[in-house]
Image (cartoon, rainbow, N blue to C red):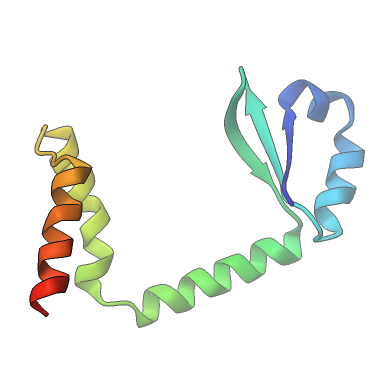
Length: 97
């Protein structure tokens, strides 16, 4: 389970939270003005995350990796589709398959 703490707690108790993160049991989500701003995790977990990410990227379909960028660009351009419409299209495809 991840802990969520305000940045003021991190400032006053940094050593405590580094020990928690270092233990590998929890990641700590740090908030600023009530919103998530950063994540504190142990170094070993961070290295494992980097290795898994690299493996995923090496094995992934280049087109699939490009899709989130395309979606973000389309969203910024106002080219959006309502969720209900997407779900209806997916249901139609599922039925016809």
